[in-house]
Length: 275
Ligand SMILES: Nc1nc2c(ncn2[C@@H]2O[C@H](COP(=O)(O)OP(=O)(O)O)[C@@H](O)[C@H]2O)c(=O)[nH]1
Ligand SMILES: [Mg+2]
Image 1: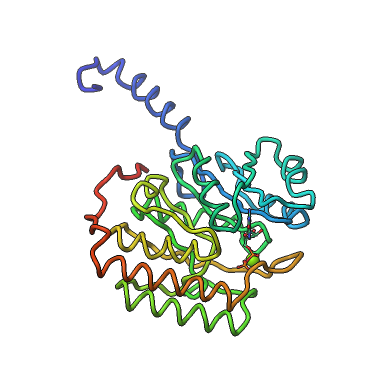
Image 2: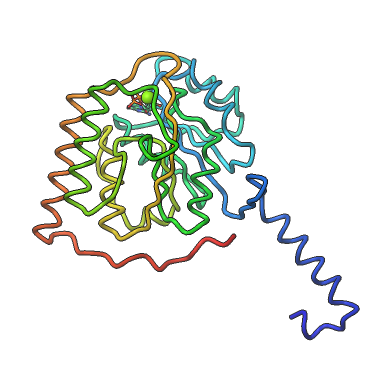
């Protein structure tokens, strides 16, 4: 369009265009500005004491925070609203972290969704790394405590061993190259939800997502992440009970592919993020 304008008007038109672009793009680091709105989903069950820390680490360029309350008996919802009056609170109808996340995803209005635990184990400042991976071309930015640069203060040796064994099983069975499996800090383009059906209720949700994104041919990039200790309270996860649930998901997903009940899906060639 600028080529048909007289040269005296061209710079004014270009100036307006640049001003419009600047208003659409939010700087998220010293070298990156993004246009897509980012929603953060936080599943929370009795995390009132941890929320002040969690909310404090979230970057100010976040579009919305969706807190999914698992029928907390403490002040989780009141504290969340005090800390952030614009927080979107979703009251969970069912039970379990998976059920909570599925409800939270449905409530998001952003183009990018980031999953963040409410126990203080995740540093919200890492969101910029996840978003960078997504605007750089990934469909799914998968946090990893065992990729170079990642780490964990929160996992017991038993949980580390179980996670490693289950991760190895997923890599062998589905041709993935993951360094971590059962980790709650991940981010993805909302359109990925059209390609992966989520139908589980518990802590196996991350495993199900990690398997289905591979099966759907989506582009997955691991993002090194550090998991800190839960600040207050105790984990709701039981290594044995939830490890068995994760194993069942892996076996079920393998059976689904082998019997061909779920059709293979070609790699995504959908809308690409614009920088
Ligand atoms: N809404 C909701 N959140 C849950 C539920 N179970 C766990 N969470 C949340 O999921 C996150 C991870 O749970 P956590 O107990 O820390 O498990 P861990 O990180 O695997 O040890 C925390 O923010 C919990 O509050 C649930 O049934 N409903
Ligand atoms: Mg935790």
